[in-house]
Image (cartoon, rainbow, N blue to C red; front, side):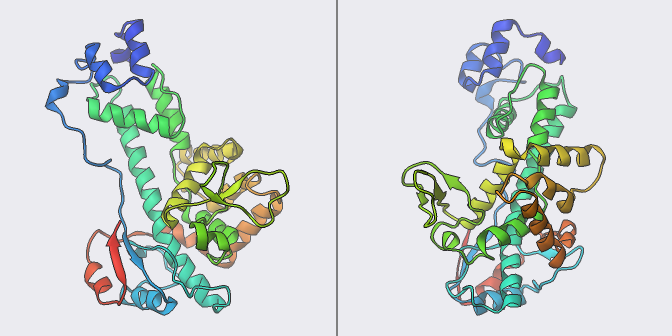
Length: 329
């Protein structure tokens, strides 16, 4: 990359070793990134943030009423637009004894906007990284350089002087998880959202933690083990952590390799095929993979590859007609 090859060895070290932008400016690198630092302002939020309108209900019937007003029905058809809402947490009377078809319909519709929003954020991150890669050699301003640097750190990829190659490695990790796969695993791991860990910790996927005070001790934890079931501030936070775990965890390299091959071949991400990369998610191995695939097949979740979030706006008035507390988030 021409613009990088002109840097002396010391400048390269400071540029890619993760020093602060202020230190980079002291070294005179503001010239490299296209202007004076004091002419730019830091953004108030990252450009890929995707917000949902959070709503809280005490009764399943209230959630169903809202879904009906929003014409949000299950099962969905190809091309359906999903409301930008987060039913978070699930209603208090959403219990294991709820009739199965109602339970599934509510669970899938509650989880789907969370999955689509998180994938939408990752899609924006990928578009940003691809734009940078496509303009290799052009000046990169300090704000966008910092955004790029943070993405490398977030996905635990080394940012080297060979920036195009580094971005290629980043894109292999920074990618979406098909909603069908996510919803099938959420249903499996959380007993359709009725598990103790969902109620007490907003934990949909059985994520562990070893940090004191950050989790709930499982009743069946073997003697001598120190892990706990991680607590999350919201269901969406659990979804975000699950996707991130698949994107950076050593156990899921096969999944990422399969996904990368699909991207390179110009194919859509196939949830059934990607499930093959989940053998290490559970001690059940291949049996677990087949269980996830069975949930996808029996609930016809493949159609979710062809749905998306509705345009911003237009649902606030409908939500306000339903007796529930709502907040933006």
